[in-house]
Amino acid sequence: MGDLVAEKHVQYILSVQKKKDSFESVVMEHLRMNGAYWGLTTLHLLGKLDTVDVHEVVSWIMSCQHDEGGFGGNVGHDPHILYTLSAVQVLALFNKLDVIDADKVTNYIVGLQNEDGSFSGDIWGEVDTRFSYIAICCLSLLHRLDRINVDKAVKYIISCQNMDGGFGCTPGGESHAGQIFCCVGALAIAGSLDLVDKDLLGWWLCERQVKSGGLNGRPEKLPDVCYSWWVLSSLIMIDRVHWISKEKLIKFILDCQDTDNGGISDRPDDAVDVFHTYFGVAGNVFLFFVFSTLFGHVISKDTQKGIFKKPSDFLLPTSCFGSCHKIDHLISLCLC
Ligand SMILES: [Zn+2]
Image 1 (tube, protein in one colour):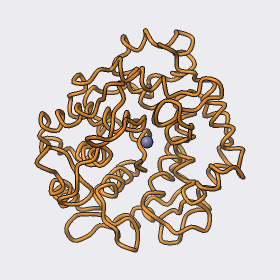
Image 2 (cartoon, rainbow, N blue to C red):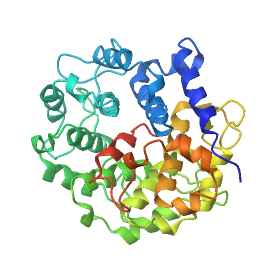
Image 3 (cartoon, helix red, strand yellow):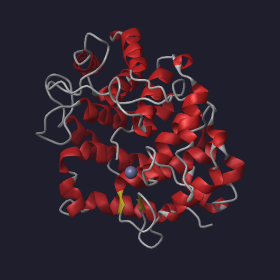
């Protein structure tokens, strides 16, 4: 089995940041805020956040904020709850939450909660359990969770639970690993994980592991590195992570690396991108801390030192994110 080529991934992320006219950069234009979050969090996980100019990042983020408190995906783009969470997460990453007016951001999110407890993504009203998670995560980071009706939000999420134990984007929606992460994550932060049938959900989630060791998002779909994150972290939150093969999953993620130029793709031999690099690295880091003895065999001691600069930042309880402030930084919400 190979090694995590951490230094090459750092170089890849830094090169993407510089290539503002590249194809990848142009197609990411409208969601640059999410891209910034993925790239910067990857650098943070690899102990290289100090390679970027904090003031430049913070001033760009603030230039994406609108009067009503929400953030756009880039300068001049409409505000949306998706970009608002990424903005808050990046500021949290740099310990710069004090530059925003937390009440203003909170008011924007509070205004998106609907009568039934669900959340809309923006003024156009699309409802999705991703937005419930975002609202709860964001307000938790801002220490303003008491400003929304958490009981109603939890009730709505539970109404999206299916007979197979999974969750969909709205009531009756097909179970999907990304949505499950959002619903379980939101319930974890809200202290309501007791409402989940952990064995039933754990069974559905562990069935996502295919022969190659990778995880897919739904039955009959191809495995994808980003699901390493959605499925793995959901299994950890419900204490069922020992139901999948960690060795095989690590091998799958490592097989998706571009070992020459850095970056991680969705599956072996595909083109790399920032999104999957982030989830591949985050999945690996998570695996390391949860199964450090196992992962110790996979990456060299030197690489571990380079990657895990401040391991105390990421020491996790075995079961839950909700109680761990730092882990909130690792979460992002665009689904493949
Ligand atoms: Zn993916």
